[in-house]
Amino acid sequence: MLPGEKNAPLKEISKQIDSSHLSLTSKEEMEKMINTQPGAVSPLSLIYDKENRVQLLIDEDVIQMDYIACHPCINTCSLSIKMQDILKILLPAINKEDYRIIFSD
Image 1 (cartoon, helix red, strand yellow):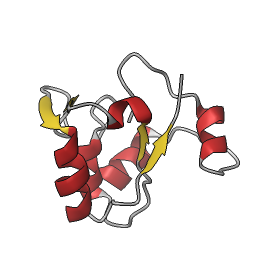
Image 2 (cartoon, one colour):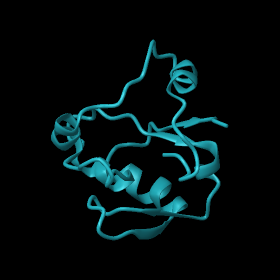
Image 3 (cartoon, one colour):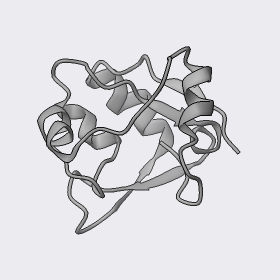
């Protein structure tokens, strides 16, 4: 999760999480893993990750926000949700409490 004005610096993030490299997945894999299409991905998409294949990375700026705007797994509308509700209610309910905080410029 990154703020809208930031790009994902994949090389920098891969170093932070001790991964040899990161890459973006295909539309087909995304649909298969989280039942969501590019442009509609949000923390709510994680409810479909039944095999626990997706690791949630949250930018330090996002973790400090009071509210985030995200799509409800389709990009025709957006929801405003308290970040603390994501962290304290949603993620524990779907067994995703192992998120990692990342730092990016």
